[in-house]
Amino acid sequence: MKIIDEALEFETRKLSFQTTSDRIIASRKVKSLILGINEIYKESQDPELMDLMKRLTVIKKKIEVRLKGRSQS
Image (cartoon, rainbow, N blue to C red; front, side, top):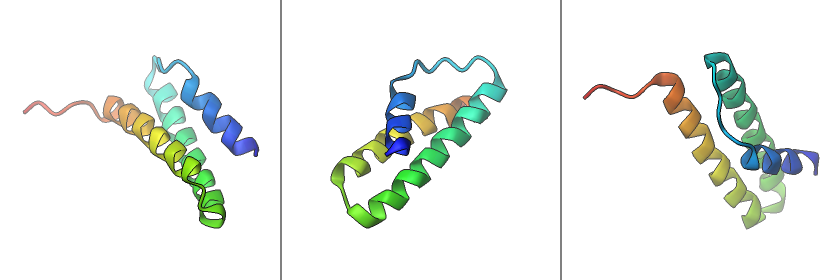
């Protein structure tokens, strides 16, 4: 399961994306990982895969907040 190993490696990587380009690339990467794991999850219904997707989604949301900026309200 190469995609699961790749997702676990991405999850443990230090998240310090310095440039906007790095953040865009990371956001796309984590999205593709989530979608790939979802395809496996549809077949196996493994709860560990769901937990992994949830953790990756949290990381993706953090990256997107940095991309879009915080609202000035």
